[in-house]
Length: 119
Image 1 (cartoon, rainbow, N blue to C red):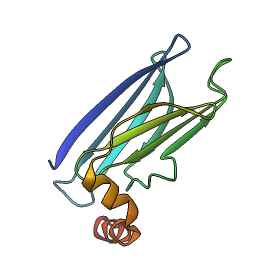
Image 2: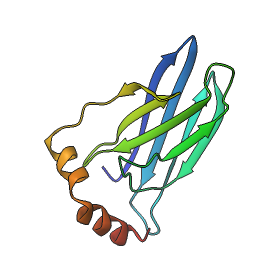
Image 3: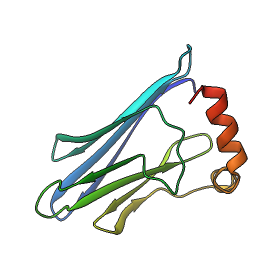
């Protein structure tokens, strides 16, 4: 649970979108990050973040002729859950469980996590 990597794949109008993320909480400072690839080309990345579902962890504009903008949102209490928005429409969403929804509805928990991780 302290060192993990994840990968999500989806399609949008014949374009393959791949999102990867990883984190390592075994040492301080904590490390982590992720990448967004469209058709195997890196179009965006981010460092270690505490996800806040209403704010995208990465927002990319003008990816190609069909993808004008791409937003990646993250949430999750014990495992990252992802939402992928392309041109204003969500094309992929992981299902949130009871703990994920509790985490999202309690900004104090997010604030404590940020303080604990030093972010």
